[in-house]
Structure formats: C-alpha cells, structure tokens
Amino acid sequence: MIHTSNQGENSKHKSFIMIRQLYKSDLPALEWDGEYIHYRNLFREIFKHARKGDSILWVLELRDTGIIGQLFVQLKSPRRELADGDVRAYFYAFRIKESYRGVGYGSNLLDYAEEDLRIKNYKFVTLNVSKKNMNALRFYSKHGYKIVTSEPGRWSYFDHLGVRQEVDQPSWRLEKKI
Image 1 (tube, rainbow, N blue to C red):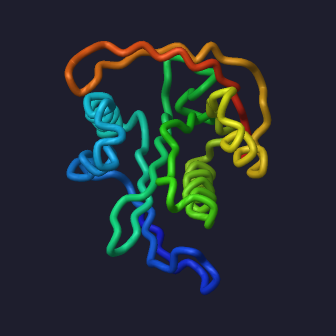
Image 2 (tube, rainbow, N blue to C red):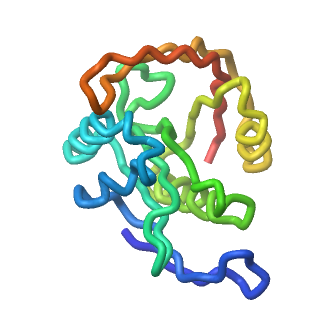
C-alpha cells in the first residue's frame, strides 16, 4: 500500500511524501545516521515478525530526502489487551525526525495507519507513551487517544553489539476507538 501527496504551499517542508511499508533494504535508514544504531538487532527482529504477518511496518519517505518517519503496528501480541489479531492493534516505535516535526507528517502517518486498520476491520488502537513525554501525550490526545491505565514500561533488547539493554520507562497506555 502506498499513499502519496504533496504538502501544502504554506508547509515548512514542501515535498512529495510517500507512506509505504518498510522494505528490508530500509533497515539501515531506521538508524537515523547512527542515532538509533543501538536498535539495529531489534529492527531486524521486528522485520522478521512483520514478514510472518504479525505486524505492519510503515515508513514516511520524502522524495529527495529519504525516510523521515516510522510507525510500527503490532497486530498480534501475547498481551491481548494490546493487540489481539482481531479487533485491537498496538502502535509502537512511532517517530518523526525532529527537524520535520510540527508540520503534519506525524498526523499524516498516524491517520494513514488508523485508516488501514479500519479497512481491516480493527476497532481499537492501543499504544504506550512515556510519562515524561508530554509532547507525545499532547499529540495523541489531540488525535483522540485517551489514557486507560499505567504501564511499568519495562522491557529489554540486544543492542548492535549484542549487549542486553534494560529499559525502564514508566508509561501511560492510551487507547482510541477507530
């Protein structure tokens, strides 16, 4: 699925955008010039799961610039309150490069992923946002997401050097009926 459009005349960044699913060849671009290199192995694992149909990995690409955003959608999870493979999906790893924020790219990507789920007959989207990330919380609230509970935000991954990293990021779980 590909969505294309031009940003409006008054946009800070006037460029042709494309929202599409992630290709394997895109994996290095998700590292954002080294900023997220520590997630290299995690991105590879996530891509393997997507190939099995457990998730959808969306990217937002600007012509002449490359990938400037991503949003991953988990369709099935062992935690059915997050994603049950039927009516509930879970958004994660949603980000837009900082210099492209505030001009609508994030809203475009979020709206697109929600519409794709509606077409697939999903009824709810859940996501977690760090309790410290007030900008993200405001963004999601503006888009109709409501806090439903608190999450401990504890998880781990193996970084690009193979070292296990522990994450402790208390979060809010948000939900939206789509």
